[in-house]
Length: 123
Image 1: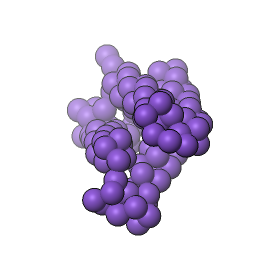
Image 2: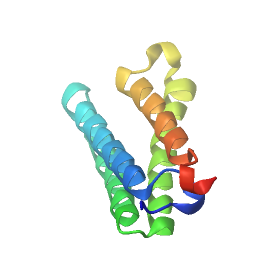
Image 3: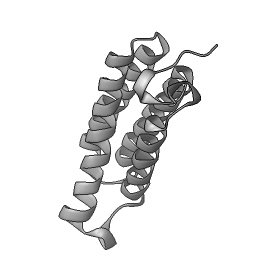
């Protein structure tokens, strides 16, 4: 029987995989900023730090340490999605936004929705 994540929703192994994929997407975004946009060093560092937070959260979820995994994952998603939304809508404006900013906003929202989805064991 799959492990339940309590109030978090889906099976823990699925949540762990989803958070792992999110961490890889954040890494990819950081590398994209570094290689394709001028002054991308800060984006690379930010992507590495936030991606690592998400990957550590994934690791803790896979080991059944729900609180640690959820806190690290939530921090990574909140800071990443929040920063991209702030930068896109408040600093640059929507029409001046980079493609990776818009993608990361959508991906962050999707991950939040999927991580909060109630699973069969939670009903």
